[in-house]
Amino acid sequence: MQLTAPTASSSATEHAFELVLARSQMRLPVEPGESIADVLQLAGIAIDTLCEQGVCGTCVTRWLAGAPEHRDSCLSAEEQRTHVAVCCARSHGPSLTLDL
Image (cartoon, rainbow, N blue to C red):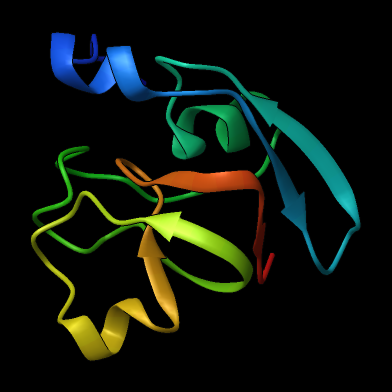
């Protein structure tokens, strides 16, 4: 697992949020500069990643509640209504619920 440093523009606007896993009801904090994928993997939840830049779609996961900030280039606008690339997405609000 490789952590990538956020760009200056993204880190200036990032805020912490709570990641909620619907199936297990686990709640995990995601801090600025952390990716959802990294937080999931550190919590022992296996998430496949490949590019970690939102290009390949390997980490695409269904989201259920919240307002995801999509930073990928692999999902269409229609796909973004139900799915998120957890390697690069953030949350616009205080929490984001995934179908995990």
